[in-house]
Figure 1: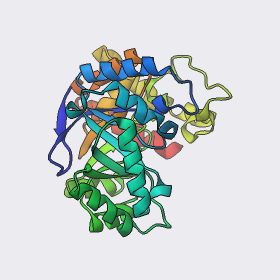
Figure 2: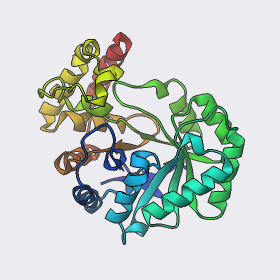
Figure 3: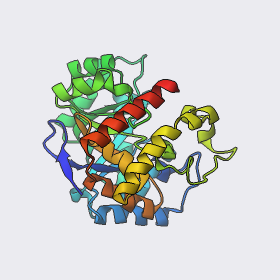
Length: 307
């Protein structure tokens, strides 16, 4: 595994972050806690230090599973959690962080995010409480997720933001329209979620025969609409061509591409499949040529503009 500095926070994160959303339960099949604990422990053994969760993932159950899995390893790990947008008044933030700490079996969080912006709660009041938590040593770094450039700038007027968590992958590149440049100029790290587009960038739905069942929550997602899946084939075929030439998987190439983007820090990869996760973390060692990057950039933008 490789590691990199987080903003100006003074500590490092692994370039692959384990995403714990699935572990809490939701609109997908969930392994039992014992199996998921084993996956988390394997990730740690493979060098993953950074783990991302939130109070809303399974109503806190994701945090509980993570806390159990890495109990005794806390000082060697970076724990990131998020507060719901409904809890952004100062008194609610305090209650939420204390509940998260209890579930995670820890007395501090390395990273605490605003999960989604709330237009009814002034960001300066929210950030004031985040600053207090930081001063008290309860959190070490402040992050925001799903913020626009304007919202990020406003938050930065009130607090030192070290990390932003947007959706970012070869099929979703909105942050390149201003946010990435601003983050680069202001030493704000970028940690992506949906790094492989909910599984599309594994090739499973185009080349692997995977079927989206009627009860699969992804069926209603924009990128999974039949007409869009058809248009996405071009990027999948290019990923496969590059992957085959290197003897790696499609998802490894898709994740590797992220690390070549300006100011990018860490890719969140979430799964309950130990084999897939161990494969995906090897993406940090894959080298892409200038020609391969140019082709991926061109085809990716062409596909995005057609959707």
